Image (cartoon, rainbow, N blue to C red; front, side, top):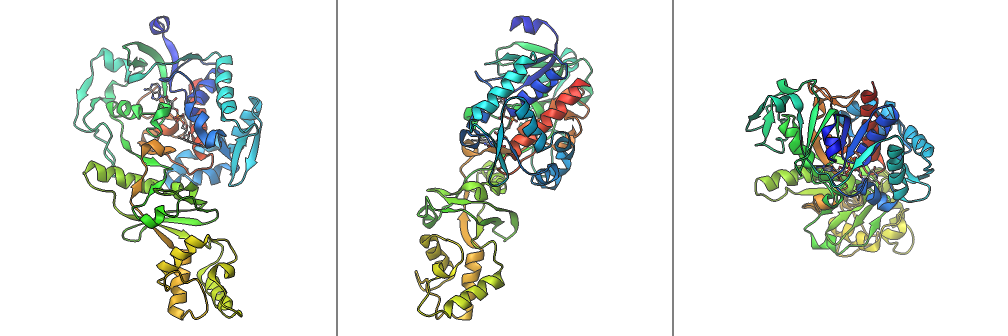
Amino acid sequence: MRARMERENEIVVVGAGAAGLWAAWRAAELGRRVLLVEKTPRAGTKILASGGTHCNLTTTLDARAAAELFGPDGARFLAPAFRALPPALVREQFHALGVETVEAPLEKIFPKSGRARDVRDALERAARERGVEFVFDASVARVVPRGARAAHAVTSSSAPSNAPAHGPATAAKAATISSSSASAEGWRVELADGTALDAERVVLAPGGRSYAKSGTTGDGYAWLAELDLSVIEPAPALVPLESDAPWVHALAGIALPDVEAKLVDAEGRAHGRRRRPVLFTHKGVSGPGAMDVSAPVGRAEVLARRRGQRCPPFQLLVDLAPDLDREALRALLIEGASRPGAPSLARVLPFDVPKRVLERVALQAKLPAGELRLNGLDKARRHALVEALKAFALPISGTTGFDHAEVTAGGLALSHLDKGTMEVKGRPGLFVCGELLDLQGPIGGLNFQAAFATAELAARALAR
Ligand SMILES: Cc1cc2nc3c(=O)[nH]c(=O)nc-3n(C[C@H](O)[C@H](O)[C@H](O)COP(=O)(O)OP(=O)(O)OC[C@H]3O[C@@H](n4cnc5c(N)ncnc54)[C@H](O)[C@@H]3O)c2cc1C
């Protein structure tokens, strides 16, 4: 370590996760000398845990469709990155590294072996073969411009001057380094043990603050705040939702494989919808349908906690018949009711819904308790039943928190970055990629895609 300390590093990459490994490997492949600093004893812990240890490494979608899943701002920001490294090229790169891939339902790509370890190992091997030096058990504490340090240009500030309107910076009382101190003299990466690593250029890829046991404890936000860069408040995303309704808990274990979940707030405003499976748990709801729309609940919860309040209520409206519009469903119920005998709702519906869920649907429609027979339904009750099937309402009271979140929403405000290089504007030589950015895509290989593609742009810029 000391030898490295004393020499000038060309590039220091912070964080050996998906983005850091990719950036280090590709920058080295493109001719740069790279030191990769990782806080934990191994690389890519989150890769190993990903996709239920199978690693959904990218998507079958094309670059544009994949970027659109990050919302309008995310899509605009990611367009150059996904053009440079579209999902198909991620697959090709892994094939070149010896990791064959296969397609899976819901637009997913996995390693053919089904082993996340193969993905992590391939990236680590590629980086080592290209000469990247790894330093493990090295926790970065600060990242400062060397000019600033030499000039002692650290000033105190109560809040970053450019804090965004919709979320204050994380380290509100952090000391900040004036932007005039950013210089061409390079960067100093200070480790928790006091070691200082000097580098011409630095890539920050320490991830977010979800799933802290994998090493991501949100350290990067404080470094950014200290550099007077705006951080959109981090919040758990792709996270299971909690409900305080005991009847929801009682459905634990039931899966709804093909439904559309829509998140609405107490005023009925929609905050996202996604057609994906939903799963009842003993705390509320999980599964991609619920997790993909969870970020607004996470944000509201973080804000409420800061004020010492409870998370405001939301509802997850589950469309149990996403292929049928209300008219078609109504016609189906009328036709079913006219059949001989007393057909039950379950027999009339052309898709499976577990009986216990249908009982709750009937209750929501205010049908006589547990009544699932269709004959004798008047128009008002039929209307209520159609509504309950199209918007089965689950009360939501919060999330299961950062420890269970697959990603962190929020992070470095995208306006700070040159989206063609991932270099921070006004901070020459400072690059940020991966989950530390204010980017968040749904489940389906999109978040690795974003980590790899932003890292690719940084690596190409470093090679120029
Ligand atoms: C359980 C789970 C399953 C997931 N499955 C998928 C999936 O199948 N497909 C998908 O696309 N996405 C998945 N994700 C999300 C995906 O893992 C992340 O979006 C992605 O890993 C982000 O990459 P990153 O490099 O930015 O951060 P990370 O991969 O989190 O890496 C950050 C690295 O930086 C290190 N670090 C942190 N602080 C410091 C410090 N102070 N000093 C030095 N090093 C530091 C960390 O130890 C870590 O190794 C999953 C996430 C979880 C938690």
